[in-house]
Length: 322
Image (cartoon, rainbow, N blue to C red; front, side, top):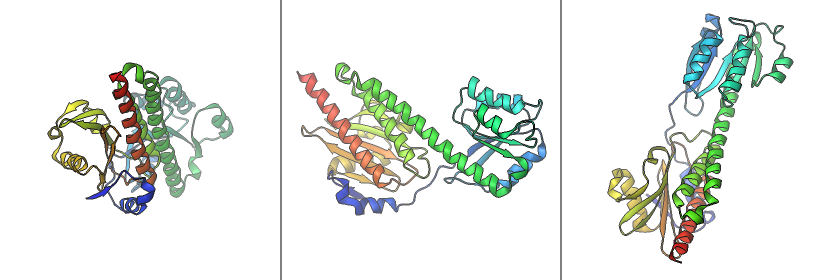
């Protein structure tokens, strides 16, 4: 197991480069693609054209609807559909356009990428549709070859991936702003830590070629043989408060114990443990796991995060003594 001191990471680029060469697993949860068309052959051809498609190690999950109303029912129960391949003329001449209005206005879903596919462009001229409806692409069925459909879906998924990461970052930032305004009045570091941690994981998503799915983080400080968990995300979200090290999984215990014993950050193929100790002796660390490789900017951001939260916590402790 490698270890790294709290010295600036610029002095340890070879270590970070070594970390970047680690190959790790990827999330296998498929991207959801909804096909909305009243012609069965269109569904079959789409399946065939996108057979074997992958992005970030994730395949496609095809969902079929044969009318605008059927698509509405599906969308009401699934808010994680990434792309909709949408016909215009189905049960009515404007069924597809009405569905766009329903998605954007009534469901308030701004994230799903809507690709309009029409076989009757004369009824829905491209310029009119693009300017009046919140769609992301307009294609005539006759122009969508297998390669063009592949490229369209690929670029749309990239866009969806970034938009979701931005939304997670926005939520985390909002929590930081709301909590930082009162942090020194309430003496509550937990909400502040949780907000910054959510923002951090969202930013890590953006800095990766593949979204950091299944990312989980845990920030804690040690003292008197206990761990005080300040905030957690992912599978560690349930942890908050005082815990013995033994309360965690054996694998985590080994990694945390190594950090506390050696007073140094360390990492493995799918995790990073960042350690920081303040001038007053307050020890704090961030444990992050991921299914993707941590880049050098990711590592720098993690180290900076732990340092700043530790300093904020120390400041609150000093204020409490007054």
